[in-house]
Length: 121
Image (cartoon, rainbow, N blue to C red; front, side, top):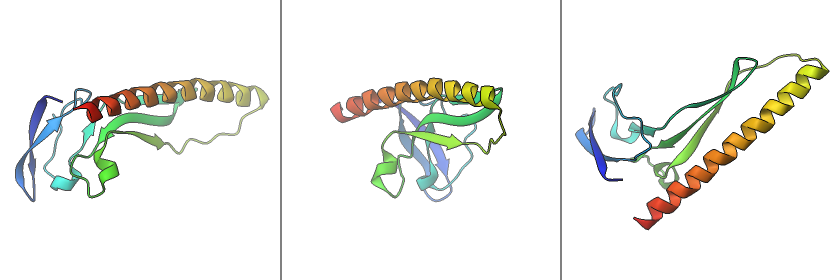
């Protein structure tokens, strides 16, 4: 983490924050409280039949009140998707969830590597 970014906050004015290499930047930043500053990585949208089921992305809140939120993590959000499926639909959904589980494991591996890199700094 060699880069920094200066972000405006409502409570502390401009704040210089180290920016992880995976962060997509802050072009759409709106001034907020310092505790609410966050870094976000690429969104991974996991879908079934064109409908979004999950969104996952690397995330870090460097000034969060709790230490565990200051560490890089994988933000995962479930959508409100629901459907009644026939037997074939359930099988297709199960197969899709298996693929998504593999993708989430790959993201977990990436997160573990980043954690090791952060610990080594």
